[in-house]
Length: 305
Image (cartoon, rainbow, N blue to C red; front, top):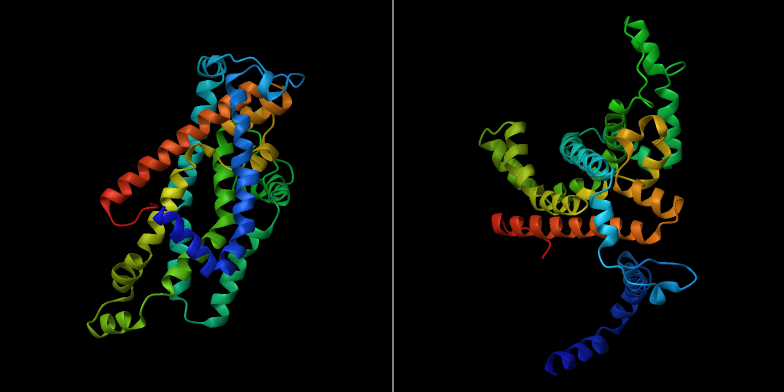
């Protein structure tokens, strides 16, 4: 009763702030939490004629079908490979870029580098994939022209399954590294310049100042973003980009959980089965997020909660 009274007093005292946040809360309730009631179709044989509530319960039949299915090992392996590839190669790049940009003292050059690296983020995924097909074409692509010029055989980057993950991850790094560095630059702007002055007087080189002052300053931000990335480990990348790059020739390497759910749920109209696969994916992501957050809290002082 006391806590409810305190909440009411807080709302009355700061009603303007609560009014500002009300649309955000309404958005999450309407579009994120309310649709969760539909997740029950993962345990039913959903038919549109009967609706969600009247469709018959079938228990874990759809989960068993997915675990024993022919595509289970392929989509799990592809999802983990793309996610780990993106995490190991892509996660450090914005950090290194922010540390380098932070060391640039020439204002116009710093603005130029930031503009060049931020620009790809604003391109639509359709344009990015179109650029990839144009650059990596075996007939007219500039990359294969360069390979021929070096006396090498052209490579079918967009059709060879062995190259799909590399092309996907590297193009994703190119598009997002500049935008991802913004949050680290914001963290670096909070570093006290007197620390660098004192270190310089003590004879510390630039690399030592970066390692002992700048890197510790951004470590809490790095830890939080790493936890969030681990919570999406089974996401397998952007669904839209995967679908744009995916075709029959590279399906062996490009088929991940999200595209499998899309293909079976929307393409095959197997809504209950697709919901079961999606629910399994979300449950694994949730467990990963909680586990990594627990480890981070035990290892240091930075965690989500």
